Image: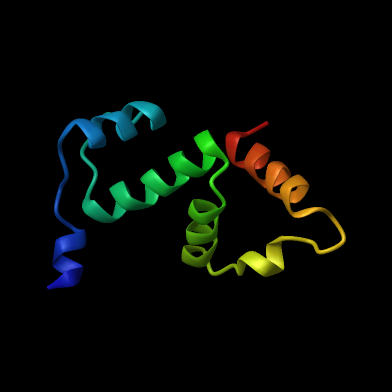
Amino acid sequence: MASDMLELMMQGAGVEKIKKFFGIDGEINAYQTMFLSCVMKAMQKGDANALEKLLKISGEQFAEVLDVTVGKSEKLADIMDQLKGE
């Protein structure tokens, strides 16, 4: 049942905001909405929790991505710049 719920097409103001941010014209399902919401939050606010969720989804571990020899905030800033395409 949970898998079916993730496939439901989403609509509403929040979904439209996400679609506009990413330039998506078509419909997006619940899974895509949640994933893109995390990406958007991570990019806009430098949200470490959102970044951690994205890394977990992709199979990465947050602690492995952050280099202990570099300050956490500095490394996070680099990662956020990469997500923004800078």
